[in-house]
Image 1 (cartoon, helix red, strand yellow):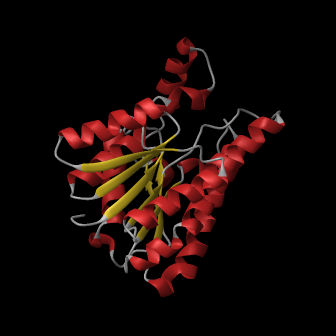
Image 2 (spheres, one colour):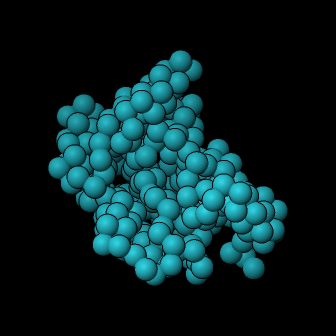
Image 3 (tube, helix red, strand yellow):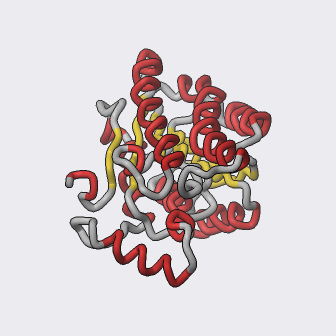
Length: 252
């Protein structure tokens, strides 16, 4: 599905990003795995290569705009084009409204600003691909309200509005822009979302999963499958939409 294509995945060292990078590589793409954690990045790259895929790791802090420019320059210099940009990076939100300046800045810079600027910096390579796909990872918390973190909902809802606008702005260059809105996903970040002790996390997870029509959290690979659809030509006429992958949560 992605033979002879170049893809880039942010926060590709673990969780949904790792699953997405692996899925893209399995389908024939050359994958840049971008993450702040060097060991995790290298592990994902080595795993992809061990399975016969092609990948390179880039260690970068997405809060550093000069680092993001460096990522874009490397892609342009090495390949000249980028077919798939998966803006997967994101962090759980601080609970409540009593936030420090550092918590506010981190959520805005990581969940929203980084993906916006990386898309801008890579726009030349995306245009050169003649039919590129840009995928943003939002959240069901950007579609419906979240009692856990209003600011997290704010950043993820903003991404959905950004996707609609970029879909219109980039359509003339043949670039499609869409979003995935996962619900609860079994990743290391899930515990941080509930902001509780290990014992309380299990109780909160159980109560939250009970609200989901399918009765469980998703696996990272299930999110990766939707990312693959949006990355491939199977979604060639799909742009400006957000796809909830939430077990029916937002259908209620």
